[in-house]
Image 1: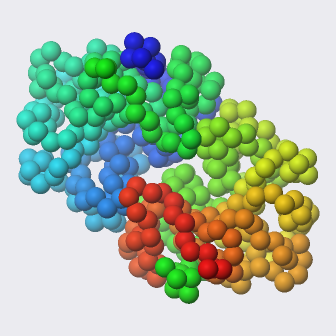
Image 2: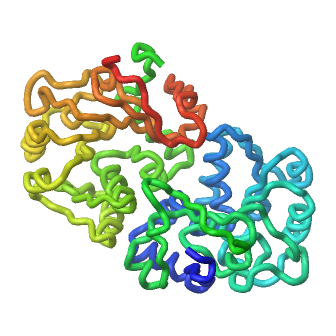
Image 3: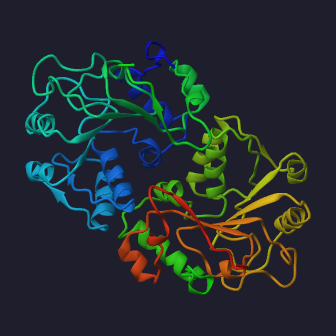
Length: 214
Length: 214
C-alpha cells in the first residue's frame, strides 16, 4: 500500500464512526476500549499499561486529567490491583524509563496544548527516549499533522500506532507506522471509504504499514 | 508444568472469581467477554465467531437458547453486521464445516443435558470433525469430567481452550490443551491458588499446556 493511497479517517469521521460502532454496530464502550482503544484520551494508555504489565514490563502511568466516565475509574482499579504506580512527576518517570507510550491526546484533540501538557510534550521531545504514539503524536493536528510552532514543533515519536484506521496526520509521520484494531465491519469500512481489512493477514491483530518516508 | 501439578479452578470458585473480577477487580462484563469470554454459555462462542470472520474464516452460528443479558443481543448484532449466518439446523451446518467451536456450556454447567443439546452433542460426537471446546467439552461435569452415560459419554473434542484457568475436568482431557485469558491480577491468582502467569511468555495471549495423556 503506497503512502499516497493510504485510506485515512478524518477527525470528524472518527467521531462519527465511534458513534456508529456504539449504535448500529452493537459495540459497547468497554468492548471498543479492549479491541482498539477507540475512545481515546488516556483510556487506551491504561489498557496498554495493563497488557504491558502482563507481558513483564514495569509501566508507570502519568494520568493527570482523569476523564469523567466511570470506565477510567475501572481501568485505573485494574492497574492498582497489579501494583502499577501512578505518578504526577513525569520528569522523574522519564528519567527512569526506556520507552514511552504517548496516549495523552486522541483523535478528538483540537486547538492549543494547555498546561501541564505543553511542558510534558517539551519533556518528551527532549528526552531522546523511544516513544510510541497512539493514534496521534500528542499536540499534532489530526488533519494537518505536525504543528509549526508551540511545544509540539519538531515532535516526531519513534512509532505511531493507528487504531481502527490511520488519521490524516499519518501522512506526515516519518517513523514506523502500525495499524491495530482489526474488528471494523465491512458496512462501516464502506461508509467511511476505508479499505483496511486486506492489510492484515492470518491471525494478526496488528500490522506495520509503509512509512511515509519510504 | 506436569499434569499432576496443574492448578485448576473449581466451578464454585470460577463463579466467585467472576464476581471478584467484576467488583474489586474493576472489570466490566464486556471487558471480560473480550479478554477471555469469562462469562460463558454462548457468549465466548459469539466473540470467537467475530474474530474468526476477521481472520478469513466463514463461521456459522448455532445459538438456539439466547441469554437474557443484552450483551448477547449486542454480540449478535456485531455478527449480523458481518453477514455471519445464524442457523437452527445444526445437522446441515455440521455437514458443511470442517471445524467446530463447542461453546455451548460453560463453567457454570451442571446437571443433565436437556434437549436440544443432547442431540447436538450426539451429532458432534459422531461427526468426526475437528472440535475445539471452550472451557469444557459440553456435557462434561466441571469437576469430574467425562460423563459415564448419556449423550456426552465418549465425547472427547480435539482441543480444549481453558479460559483464565483450567477447570478440574481438564485433568481428564486427552486432546491438546490451551490456556487463554492472560489478564488475571496477582491478588486473585493468590486468592484462588492459581499460578498461571509464568506459563505465558513474551506477548503471547495463549499458551499450549501439556496434555493429560503425556
